[in-house]
Length: 127
Image (cartoon, rainbow, N blue to C red):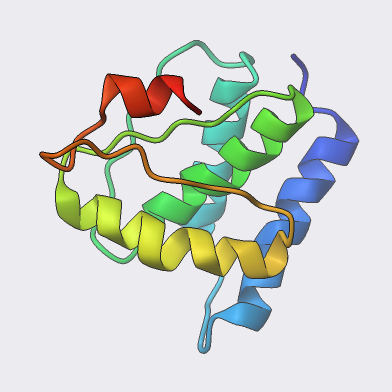
């Protein structure tokens, strides 16, 4: 899949719309770079793997959710996000995705937690 001009414009528009939703939002070059790197990787333009390391608060989560959602929609696929800890699960489900729903009104999301708060194969298959 290629990152078309329309897809790049969609990703940029959603990123810009965050400025209206988050008080004191400051666009940062590292965050824009992460978004571009994730988009290129998910589109298959730069290999299949990407490791991102950045301090807390840089915006890593939104940097992979925005291009991930855009590309999943373009490809008519479901984006699945799996985290290493419950705190990040809670942040994504309670804060980040509801925020993105404000700029992507038809965004649908759900959690597939099992009893131990980790992915449940049965719940995942039901998606």
